[in-house]
Length: 97
Image 1 (cartoon, helix red, strand yellow):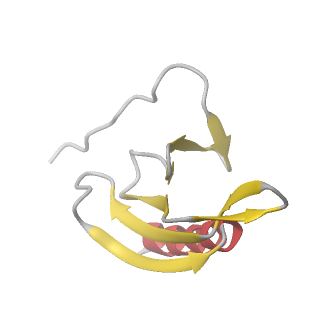
Image 2 (cartoon, rainbow, N blue to C red):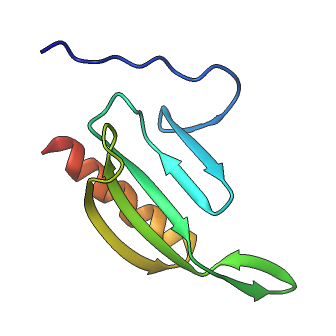
């Protein structure tokens, strides 16, 4: 079976460690759609700190890049930094498996 190769979206977008990092609303997607899975962070709620709204509870999901209904790993963390850090480790482990 021939492997499907997707082209990168044209235009400017943020990259981290040579992979696209895209945010739309409260959803953040990280990863290359040509890989077998990607990281999705869903900001569930916010807290106010010094008059600014910061992400509080974040849902972490590793999903199949070909079938977004296939969730390979899932969890919840407090704070965007912790959620992204855990998500990067999970994504790395899933891509190596």
